[in-house]
Length: 350
Image (cartoon, rainbow, N blue to C red; front, side, top):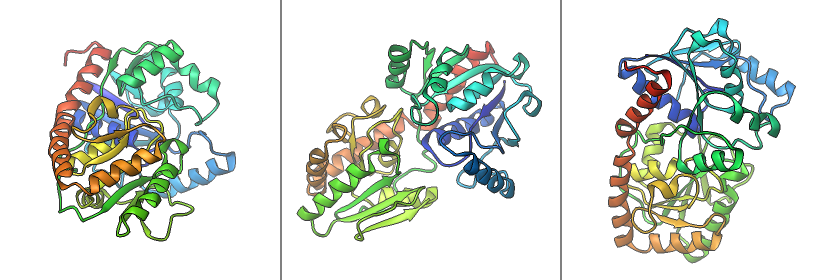
């Protein structure tokens, strides 16, 4: 099977990681796989001047994914147009602008597949975002909650659900957890809930004065309390160590299509206090392998973190069960389902 995966960019996000991991597994399984992304950046929320700035930055960069070893072909093209893309059996779109471009491609560029990460409100004109749900393509959602959102909210038909997965060759226990240490993943997008997380940790420090907070992210925060350390764009080796040596992960997200960090933390033996958001309740169960709290409930975050940090028995039990959950959602188990879905989309038995 010949597969083209069209990405809007190759910056590190959960959705981009998922598609690149699946692309590697497609290639390893013997499928001719090409990942494509454009020189000219999609508008999203950028001004025209910012688009030009990003374009010139891209022109000066090598066409590579510096944060992930890619085993398939990577192709950077001026625009997502038929003249720049290879012939294929399947062409996969991700973000809404790529879905618009992919559905305009001729049939010889592949059967159109849209992998829906979530409804992308706030990333462009709402009418153009909603319009993609009427496009004729084979649609795959990354969680049951996304499937319900698209079908019930927008009358969009979703053919399959294929969850994201965690790579056990990247995320595994790598060090001992340090006392009263909490990891927080930071992003300024309000839907990520960073403000809730910072507020909860600030309150927790009053109860646990020797609390250590590590903050990691791909965007530098405008402000953090001076007692919180920040690490910019850690690579996977460093991130694995941060998960492994933290007594807890706080995941305060307000809206997700999937929600990968708690699963990555589980694979590293780090228990999580996480909002019941996205697919988290689909792979995690409260008090079995994680502690789940309502979205936006800062008091509950503080209480559950304090309980977790002061109970070695609870941490040990959640860690052990979390490793089992991470194994069920490991890439070697999940990627074949994605490959099978693409085969069904293309009508191929190969």
